Image 1 (cartoon, helix red, strand yellow):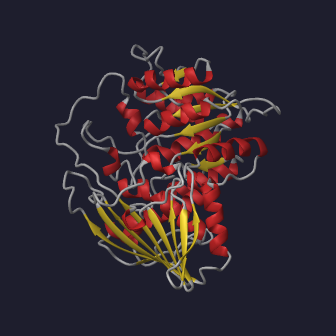
Image 2 (tube, helix red, strand yellow):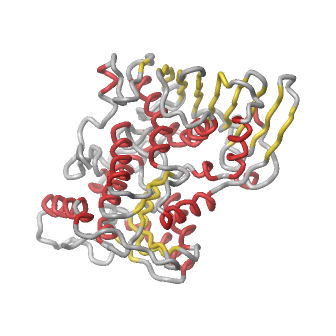
Image 3 (cartoon, one colour):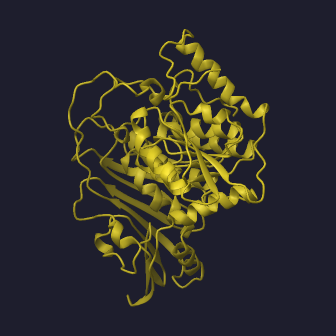
Length: 454
């Protein structure tokens, strides 16, 4: 079977495109039945293919390529214009050639590939990862883990069925300073935790207006859309701002803090209810996701409050050059902070190396722990788990429950800012049929359909 790639695009292939796609999708999804995963030797490099070569994907490709225990074998993207920069960075880092493929299924067919890094947009996270699991590959999938609740559950089922290591790119879970924060909370020094506040504040620019266009040469736009609807191509339309392709720009960033909040309170799977409010106030530029979003999640014994907006120039992320220092954030103006409110004390916690500080009942500072970013530690954990077959720090199940909070807030907003009761056993809303229709994509575009049984 042929594959469309940079070296030999299928411009002149006489096979009908729909037939080709259906045949190759079937081949990818049944691959594991014919060839199991490669067994690694004690000193053997982990062979990785990368799917999605945007900023994060290229960064991860280069970071893994710099490791002595990893070889990057494939760089895959539906847009061949992205190949040059990623190829140069990876080949320089590992002093070894890579294979460029416009169709990621080429690397799934290669039995020498042990793992896949999935750094695609949200709408490709589930199907790309499930196909990789079925092909016997372990997976490092970027956050937010899934486009909707149902897809997240299918990813868990695929990981368990095919006994794959699937980790999510919520790297602060692997940070040593976060382990110290968890130990501090569990020590009881803050007393009983009744309220957790999570913030995600920043300033986004509006989308510029532009007419629809013909997709540029080098971009397989049909495959880029994949399981989502094929909207007219418009280079000014940012996929993060469209429900069809994204969980929204707020969840796309806030899932880091929500994940850490869950970690701090004991990784409780899901809340009992969600209430939401918000709107599109400032960025009325054609997006259909909110630019202001607030949600309250009610658990047994405590409440988690979430506040986010995309128009606040005074509330910001910690600058990159400060994150790996002992400097603490200016907490009131830190746009990505977590606040833990206990009966005896209070804690500020930051993501991506921001560290944490704790205060007693008299508002006196009693603990300061600077942080460091944990990309390297998170990548270490993934490689170690590939070799040991242990569950990773950001296992697929934890990734599902963290982005679940984003999905619940989105759904409550989409049904008119309502309070909804959530059933964790069925992962549905027992008293809100109109909310249940957002648990899964209304329709998957052939042939990119996620089956009920993965």
